[in-house]
Image (cartoon, rainbow, N blue to C red):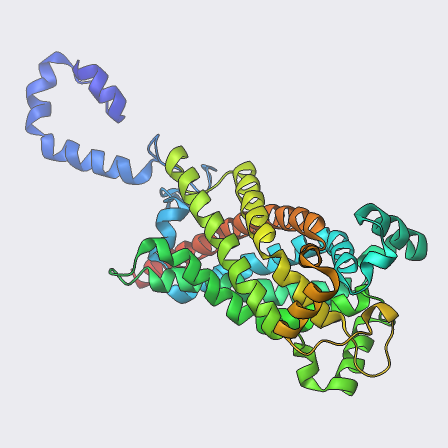
Length: 377
């Protein structure tokens, strides 16, 4: 019995006649065991580096990201979320830009007279401009989506961290409130980006910066925010629905799996379902926003985009009068598909990027604190 215990602790096996001596030296054995637990990695502890040639201070057990993030400040969480969001935004928008192009063409004024259906829009776009026709305005997307996604996710993470500090604030309301905060702030960057992109998708000639110059020349700075109210009207419910749905689905999956973070396939399915729910409900608002953004003042670049609207309510009335209720559902198929794919890729990329950034940040912070403590010692 004594031999097995001693062997499991890394101690020499006592001989029968040494048992009494060993018991009297219990304090020294305790000290040996304490030293042992500090210089060896226990079997159940995860490590950041398993290389035995590295210093022992790198072999300390590393807590799970879910528990480590609780030690971070609100600002640190927001910055980590912004970094992950920027990476995820650029990746996702570029991948799904062709679907967004077709959706915009289907929602533009007069599209029903030009395109029979979604497939016809795809074929005619390819015939007229080739594969590059699906990537009109992509440069503005890369710049704008990186900034807007960083601001959006950073604000959402800030909102979640800030609101969670209030004990009396209902936990169920934290995701929708955080999503609303993110959309209000990020829309200031997203609207000019979408305006330039959709003008190019609707037929505006020139590069992104040339379209920007023309907007500033004809409409001034405020021209960059044409359709801002409609965008905010669309983004608030869409953002709240999408972000909240994902957070609730994520919480349910994590509770069931008893893990600290989603697996990649889980984040894909949760994101796709959240995006589909949001897009199907908010398509009428997106149609109104698109009509306001694709109209052109001054010299028109396309007959399709020449009709003028005077605001959100006037746009809704005119669509209902000319096209009926079906007009408010234009592009629903491509939009639901786009939103489901966008959310699946977006939340997958965000969860992956955020976890990677978090682990790198915590590792550097831990090493920095260890170096400081060693220097002070």
